[in-house]
Image (cartoon, rainbow, N blue to C red; front, side, top):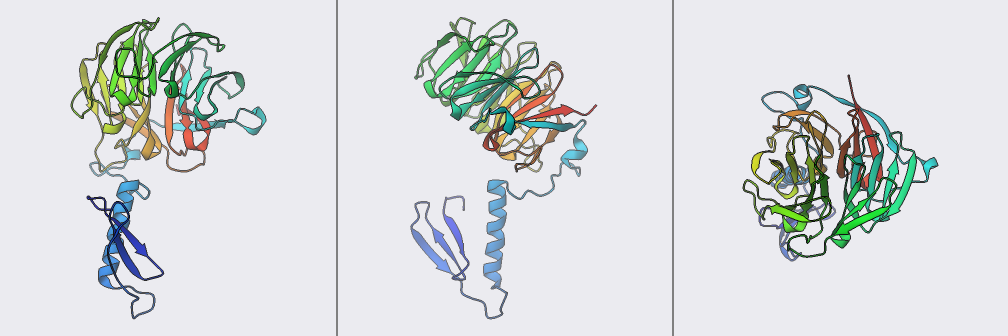
Length: 354
């Protein structure tokens, strides 16, 4: 595909290249079978090579070994994580269907927004099912210091609040762009004071509420400037009240204070594997480290609170430590990392190597 959206097709059986408009209308074609068996004309070979390169860049399917300043991402990493387990296991009966969000409480229990099963599932840290309750299309999920579970129920444009056993407490929101309204909110976070922050995804903004759902403030608009957003999907708050936003469409992380004042942003160099591509989930641990579910790089990246790269892991696939479109990430009080491995319909658990 070129910059104008025209599509080039390698028509193997007919020994030619065909060019189409973005709407599928044929523009031109060229090429024929080479005289020497097993070889193709120089012009055609060059074009095929160029198409392969374009495909790799566009779809990130065959990346070269990442380099930044002459070193690979692994050489830059200062720490690492090891795979512990994945669930559900067959014996639990707790199957997932495209889970998007994951959160941990102070006791180490794990909550999963099991999006297309239209429910929340609660597990202990080993993956044992503890409870299940219904929701519409839950995406974002968070647990506050008092044990309340907050859900960004994307399909019905609301925020819902439950206790730890799944008992409904309250909800607010409706579809729209007014204060307290949402358009497909995908992320929710709660600070130590009980303030609730919502990634109002399609409205390209963040909204802040008190614990009763009363609107306090909002910030953000469509764009790529400081404090502007492009369909933000993830949000997290650290112990100091700083707000971290996965600015998904802008392929970056933004850090703001609790009132929405811009502090900093980061996205790594394009020449390295640490480059963010559609970051979705985001979590902050007790030390202020920031974990990002990097959807199109099929991995988890870890930064310090100022955006300095620390480590990454993951690749595309369904093996241990591999991911297919990871949307959510959470960290428990022991430093274990839980990933909503969405297209593999599972949760994976990792622990830091000491």
